[in-house]
Length: 176
Image 1 (cartoon, helix red, strand yellow):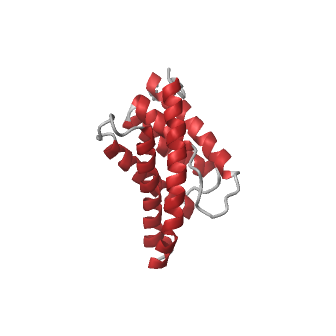
Image 2: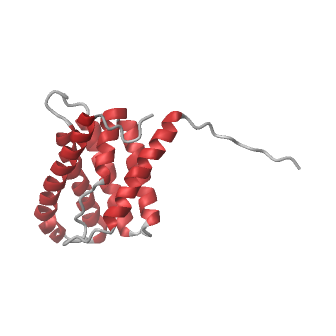
């Protein structure tokens, strides 16, 4: 009997993405240990990594980092295929779409802070949509929107400022 071995070529980009995703996953796990006053309200520290990746390496790499973070983070936290996983995945996909559109805006006026705010509001919008369509099939879920949008404003602004500072300081967050 002969054994067939399939080897996948691993590029420098693959290594870079894996290091950046590991940083985002570590922030996700650390954030899960922070007690929050309201369920579902989290600072989204891993989004700082996604923003830095978006600005340094582009949308494709940011999408890989974000989606790997959601998948691996949910596995590590024991939430894979639980409602929290689907809420996180919906929020991440919505924020990635917003970041993709945001990249088309003139960089002269739109930087990491505005992109962070776009992503934060898209993230919570995606989560509220999934919550309304699946978990709480009642419009009452939208009564929480002002609280969640306020959190998106505060955390989107602070994460954007941190990402802008990291980008200005030349921190590569895992570049080659």
